[in-house]
Length: 112
Figure 1: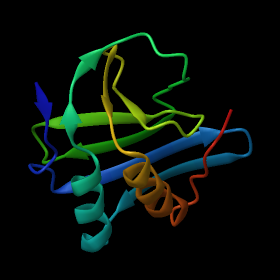
Figure 2 (figure 1 turned 60 degrees about the vertical axis):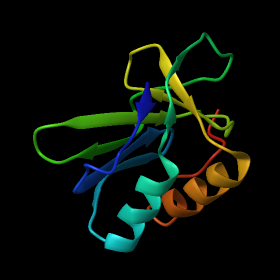
Figure 3 (figure 1 turned 180 degrees about the vertical axis):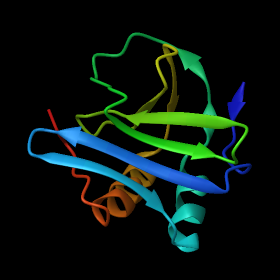
């Protein structure tokens, strides 16, 4: 099954790690579009060695439907979908672009 975040009209970020406590709603349409383009892929089940937590997450929603993406804390190109045990893999280039967007909001990787 392919994950598609095109439905999302709102994006919020959570980053609760060590000395940072960030909860922010993204309002910049350009940043929302970039995240929609990056956060897509085919779902697969796995048990990767990477660490994931909902304390570091990206929520995409339209008010009735939501997807929570949890980027790998170590910076690898995997994202867990909420607590489902299912993942998507993005390219290394997409992970770099993701990090660039998230860094604008205070989120830094790796965070292990």
